[in-house]
Amino acid sequence: MKTRPDIRNIAIIAHVDHGKTTLVDAMLKQSGVFREGQTTTTRMMDSNPLERERGITILAKNTAVKHGAYKFNIVDTPGHSDFGGEVERVLQMVQGVLLLVDAAEGVMPQTRFVLRKALELDLKAIVAINKIDRKDARPSEVVNEVFDLFIELGANDEQADFPVVYTNAKLGVARRALDDPSTDLEPLFETIAAAVPEAPAEDGPFQMLVSAIDHNKYVGRIGIGRVFRGSSKINAPIAKVARDGTVEMGLRLTKLLTFAGLERLEVEEADAGDIVCVSGIEGLNIGDTIADASAPEGLHAVAVDEPTVSMFFMVNASPFAGRDGKYLTSRQIRERLMRELESNVALRVEDTESADTFEVRGRGELHLSILIETMRREGYEIAVSKPQVIVIERDGQKFEPVEYVVVDVREEHAGAVIEALGKRKAQISNMLNVGESRRLEYTMPTRAIFGLRGELLTLSRGTAVMSHTYYDHQPYGGELPGRNVGALVASETGVTTAYAMSGLEARGRFFLGDGIDVYEGMIVGHANDDKDVAINVVRAKKLTNMRASGSDESTKLSPPEEMSLERAIEFIEDDELVEVTPKAIRLRKRQLNETDRIRTRKREKALA
Image 1 (cartoon, rainbow, N blue to C red):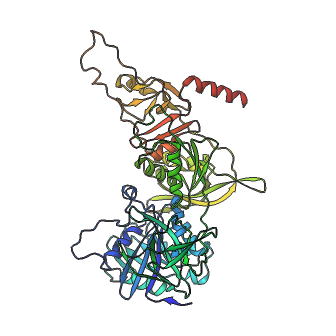
Image 2 (spheres, rainbow, N blue to C red):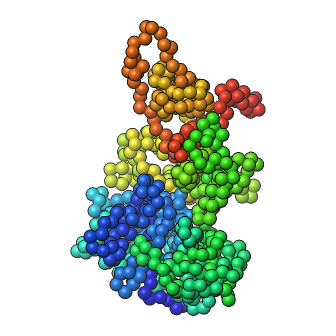
């Protein structure tokens, strides 16, 4: 096959926080993308506000650098398993992957996931052992761990014979051996040029597969992908071939752009082998093929793994609905979810029997919570239910998703963590010492992970680090214990007072302070035991002539336990909802009235 000797297409893949985006920063800086003295930020590829706040990559992004005789098209991918769909869809754009592994942490769950996908597509892998400057770095051991992982995942002899470079992404240094005197990334660029196959450039009619979608308020939808065959120019007649084979004729390429650093440059022509952007095509989706009008042939897009977790998104029907948001109706929420489907390939949205409720399926809690957070920042008000795993049937038997979980915890807290995991039907597969920590490796049901992170942080005094990724579907493991604390539920609508709350602190821990608007049925804290408690947090002190001035102001309350969106979603049970608005996150009972809740419980008990 004809190739482009001047182009190398490569994706940088790794577990979360192993340094992918920092390494891309260094590659950009050392390739002359920025002029001398130009001010630059860190993690330049993380342009999304949520990415910069959380310090993680959520969306896969493209860049390109010219270095020596080569153009390197680089795809920066997410490291969190919930965004695995982003990784899967972009791997068809590249011929090689740079697998980044932390020199101290070693092989982690997402390392396993992304490498398996790369090996399935027969991509050439280069291994970079990053953060070699860490005090607890153990690069030689980590190389052996990576080799073992290649063999475990069924790599052939050629794939298992991978080149290794040692990097310090923060300083922009790469070495072929640990004692090399290198002071820049030149060894990394040379290794990529030598190891990654040249970009294929098949002759024939134009053919390009869309692997990513971007939006621009001036030109609309922008398709990003690799040109598989031929070449095309601006205003050339083209056809769009959808994933299902539907062909739309009579289209033209109105704009062609190529990547150069952090910019996109307009070009007159796109050739096979390069990664480019196209615009001016309405209804363009991931997996579509843009082909020459004379030969409208589609390309096969990689199938993305199915979702494992579902939640119900519904219209906010609380007493405070409409206070903050701009978009409140079921039509507006449905339109927004359908728009998300166009670029979020791992997401599924289904209508339900209720016109106000939609079932949204994704890869995990974080995958769905990022969507919820994005919607609330755009002005949407919604209520969401507790996440549920998606159980499938095979030969009449129920199967549920199972996760591969790694927990790093200090020695003194390991016993309590092992006990907590055992209660959640976790099966231990490995236990080893990494530096001063104990590393515990488990397989456990996905539904057992809901609420686990918060529990482990409590047991380990905030020091446990947990990561996980999808492992397999296994036979349904039976019931799991639910939340071990009850909810403190407001029995009246009004404004919380320090007077009322100070007398109720013995009942549990509050999620909010005084002077906050609450309504009947709103959850204001968690109880000390496993029973729900209805409490009046709006009661004010009666005025009398014996009252000392300033006595209320001197009432001191314990600091409230702030509830983030992820923590709120983990906390709720089946009979509860999280109310999400642009300015507030509230927890509530589905049935707001205490009498109605008692009747329902009695009815369910009688039926049971």
